[in-house]
Image 1 (cartoon, rainbow, N blue to C red):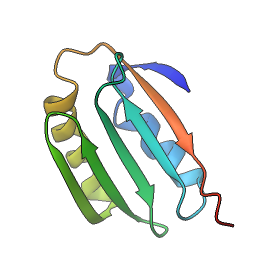
Image 2 (image 1 turned 60 degrees about the vertical axis):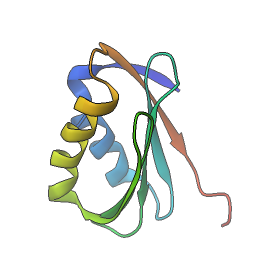
Image 3 (image 1 turned 180 degrees about the horizontal axis):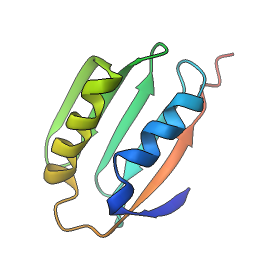
Length: 95
C-alpha cells in the first residue's frame, strides 16, 4: 500500500490499471481509510467502479475515457479535503 499526493488521483491509478491483469483491482482509500473506491479491470478498456463511503454506489462497464471524469467526480464526494490517499493493488487469486 502506498501513500500518494491527491494531485495524482486520476493519473496514477489509470496508469497502474493498464498494467494489471483482467479481474485485478485497485483500491483507493482516504488517509483515515474509512472511505474507498475500488476499480476492477473487466477488459482491456472497461472497468467496474465501486464507491464505499458517504455514498455506496457501483458503476459497471465504464470505459477508460469516461473513467477520468468519474474519478474526478468521486474525488469531490469521497475525498473533499484530502491531501493524501492510499492506493493498494488487489490481485485476483482465482487464477
